[in-house]
Image (cartoon, rainbow, N blue to C red; front, side, top):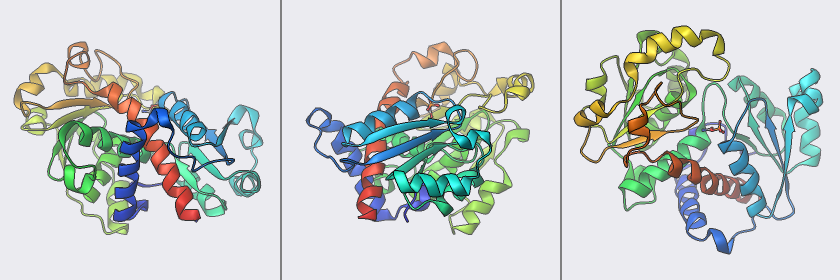
Length: 313
Ligand code: CP
């Protein structure tokens, strides 16, 4: 059974096909050229809040002819302690696929082990692969003639500021390892990339080639993209004061763009907190492409689902 839990789960050829289809879906959205999920029912099990991921998957499944079913902890037995094993096996008897947003990456892996249907990672504490695929689509759209990330993103410098131990930082590390982006992570020492992502790269023979620094100027120097995410991720609310204090030197400001490449872009996976991880000035500037990132979630989710369905067939 093919699942999409991590950025490296698809082959080079499958990735090329996914990106081409995402661009095609965007160009032809009104014509709805593809009904790959016709008459299929896909579950969407969300343990955490979501706006972009949830709505883009729900709309995407419908636009591909399928039927999305939203499941949450308060209305299902898994929220009352039913096992992952039994839930995965039962849902496999009803559904054609399952999109999951949860905390531990081990939980989604356990679901995938017991499921007899494809499982898609809609975010774990470790990785956010659907976001990275659509962010790379947005970067290609803005900076390259190629629709293939391995060609169009190679050697582009992306500097990520703030919590560099978070799922988005890990996912950028994997994007760099797979597609050759030059990834710089800039934040407090206490929040540097963890051993877990290094071990993951070693396990799958992915190059360990990212840079970590606490020097914002070094990270921003000649960067093509300055990227950030919230400082207080879901589940870290009890560390709010400590995180705000430690990360405030790593806020993205206009000054950093003076050091970056002339046409450098600002990216953020959202939700954004103006005045915290980024200034209002940068958020509202012409460099800021976060709403294009958000829109492309829809086109990319559809392309990922299409690929998974075609592989199973
Ligand atoms: N970027 C992202 O995953 O947004 P949501 O949490 O709203 O889904």
